[in-house]
Image 1 (cartoon, rainbow, N blue to C red):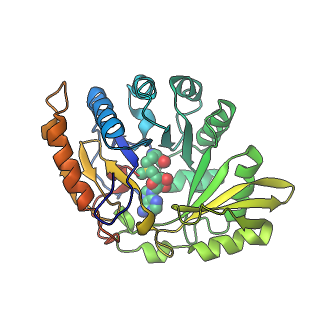
Image 2 (cartoon, helix red, strand yellow; image 1 turned 45 degrees about the vertical axis):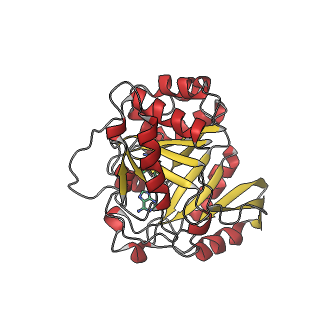
Length: 320
Ligand code: SAM
């Protein structure tokens, strides 16, 4: 599928629910109304079947909210993996509930996981997540590695005066476990819509902190895809770290994604709240493919060349 700017679109982020068991301060606004939207399992399956068999979407990321809170998750993954039209099914999670589910997720056909972890300190973790327990996430990461949901990618949102002093420590901890550790610049979305600059740790500074401890060599072909990955040596370690820099090194020209929210809307650009409703194409048992094609066509043609950075939705609703 080619968008209006000539970019190939072959990645889908599908949000299964906007419910989350954490409420990270940069993701969920204070006093946000409780969420609870869950996409119908059959609808989710039919959407992916349609996109992967008719429109060349071969990379699926299940997200939320918190996708591990979606009751039919295992059954859905089993059905999706037997489609045969997806190259990978991945999942983004806070891993609070992963330890017990990792083995069955791997057996169901999940390829790998991306896990959010912004600090190694229990009190800071509890504070930024508004109540999370770091040990649950750490045990979830270890279980994912053990069960072969690899490479496990650890996503760290770099935040000024919060974890900018921990960057090399988090990288080292993850590398010892054999994970890929990726640092993300904050985005002007949700609670950070108008204050992201205050919290931003630019990619150049992240790399500088990593280079003080390790030797980094950019991996050719990864540059801005959207992560730029680096082979790491030093401190007796080998592995990969990466930087995703939507603010200081935007990669809109290489964006290959669309999103579908848990209420069945296509969002073509993470920086733009414009959405295209697919719900009228679903009658409760089947997808009206010709109508859905028309909605998809409009969404993909409207995908902006450069993200306008006017996102009024929160990441938890958007499907981060
Ligand atoms: N609950 C899952 C998790 O924690 O990974 C999946 C959903 S969460 C919305 C997906 C990702 O969005 C997380 O890695 C989170 O850190 C990131 N995120 C949320 N708000 C963000 C912001 N304003 N800037 C950068 N990343 C953000």
